[in-house]
Length: 127
Image (tube, rainbow, N blue to C red; front, side):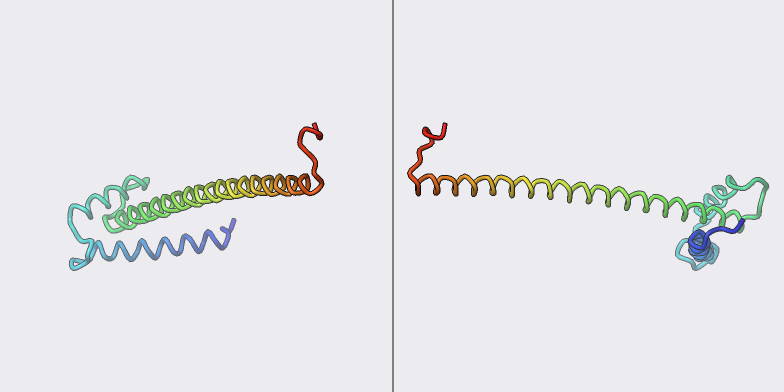
């Protein structure tokens, strides 16, 4: 069964990012090159394979998994932020509607007072 186009695009993007990071890990002058870090990434990558693979493939797998976890985490944080923003917006909207309701009642009460004064009607005669 073929994967949907969006899944293939996401996989291709993750693969590209992983290959770039892995090449930076492998190069001696790469910014991420550090033997202990490389070994830790390779060991992490080995945990996601069924059979023993060479160190370069293990590093690629480890980086790929880390990139995926990072993207999933950032997507989760973004989703939570959007939900929080939406609820904040709803709260502000509710407060605004309550202020409009109070103001409209006050205006209606003032108009009623003016009409009662105009026709000289007392509140006692209404009750």
